[in-house]
Every structure is written in structure tokens, then in C-alpha cells.
Length: 127
Picture 1 (cartoon, rainbow, N blue to C red):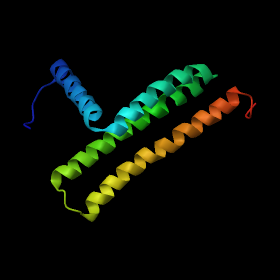
Picture 2: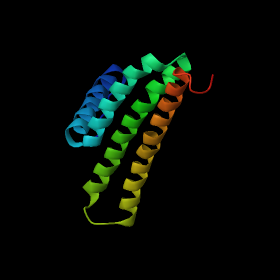
Picture 3: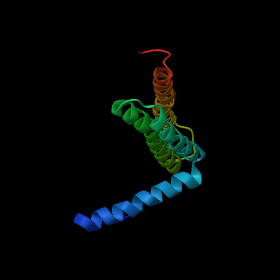
């Protein structure tokens, strides 16, 4: 792909369409991205019902979407590694594992935060 020298509005306009191609690829080829997107939508709706402050609401909105974002980044890493070679290489495996670990961190943090906020909402703790 050749480098373009677009600037200003033209660069932003074209960047938008490149991003849309990225979303389309994520939804077409990555089941995990589809699942995490749907989960982010559902959790975002729930967040409006259980958050009792703006800080809680922002936390509950941001975490699932960061999980989805990291899944897209992990998919990009995997695509690049697979493009280079299908042969096993320690560094290729490490790159894929590190991307997966980043997603895992958010897959753990998100429900922990939702449980904490829901527990507070229900009056179980943090009163």
C-alpha cells in the first residue's frame, strides 16, 4: 500500500473509511470481536441502571469498550503474524500470547468492576 500525502479534512475523511474497513474485517473474521461487541452493548445499557455516580457510569461504560478495542488490536497482531508465516516461531507465538493476555486483563477487570458497582447498588457493601 503506497503512502499518501493527504492532509487536513481529506486525511480525516479517508481515515474514517479505513477505520470502517477495520470494523468490517473484525466482524467478518473474528468471532471474539463480535461477541465482545455484543457484550459491550449489553453492559453499556446495564451501566445506566446500576451506576450511582458519573465516575461509576464512566468506568462501566469504558471497560467493556476497552475490552472490545483490545480484541481488535489482538486480532491485528494475529493477522500480521499469520501474514508473515504459518510456521511456528517463538517470537510469533509470544506476540500472539501477549495480545491475548492484554484482552484477558480486561475480561477479568470488567466483571470485577460490574460486580463491585452492582453490589454497591444492591446495598451489599461499600455503603
